[in-house]
Amino acid sequence: MANVWVECLKNKYRFEFKGLISVEDLFDLKLEDLDSIYRNLKNEEKDLQGDSLLDTAKNPKIGEIQVKIDVVKAVFDIKQTDIKNTEKAFANKAQKDKILAIIEDKENQELSEKSIEELKEIYSNLE
Image: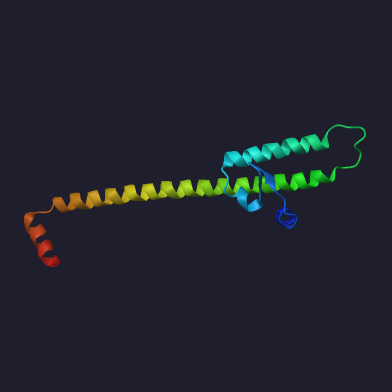
């Protein structure tokens, strides 16, 4: 996979999306936009391959398209993983906050069940 990144950067490949964008710009796009670019590249790849008896030599443009497809797919996978990790971290934080709130409630409940003498003793030890 590293070779496609090098090839893409070395050859300064650009991707069609509201004009031409660079590899770095792919990381700023939404997953839906990346999917759109991917589908367009796949269609272009099909068009270039075509079914022709005369086209015996492979079109050199196909290699570029295949590299672009690999790069867009890799960026999509990276972004999708990042989104899943962010969602998981958010869910974990929400669960931790809920647990801390329950612990606090239980501590308050335990404290409220103590006698007045025990509460006065605890209070005086805090001063």
